[in-house]
Image 1 (cartoon, rainbow, N blue to C red):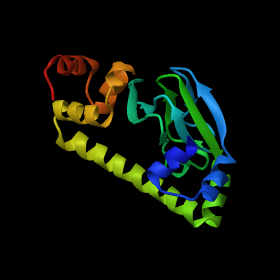
Image 2 (cartoon, rainbow, N blue to C red):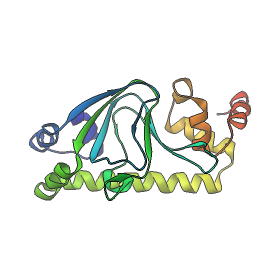
Image 3 (cartoon, helix red, strand yellow):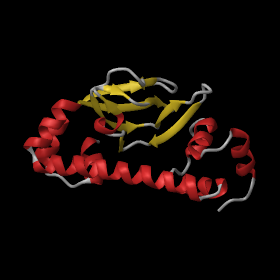
Image 4 (cartoon, rainbow, N blue to C red):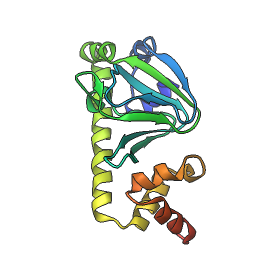
Length: 188
């Protein structure tokens, strides 16, 4: 499965993939488990093998705000973008039963230094992360709520049937009531 995820992002040789796979440790999470907590130490890179999870923050009013979703066969936000001095800037939560593969971030960084293919893979992951964040910001600033929901459905088909609607609403920057109203409309 790791091979499939890696090759969907950047084609690597079997030798390089084996180097990554040798460092992997698997974890299983239940829906609702927050497995990375803001302000707590975290020193891993993660692959989502099965399930759906999200990154989120808690705003000053105490409400959870979804930042990003991660479906199976994807990679969580890279260590370098989600931590500061080894402490997480975000919370990460399983929304369904989830299987994740973790790799020590320092060991992965060492592989990136030693292996050009792994370095290019890591750089591609970082570029993809930046692109997704910029696209989300542009959508929040320039699209209507209806247009954001349509775009969400294209990007994450079937999520509405699998995860809490509150997580979707906060990701879209709308209330749960607004999401409910939009869902009743006939949208493409």
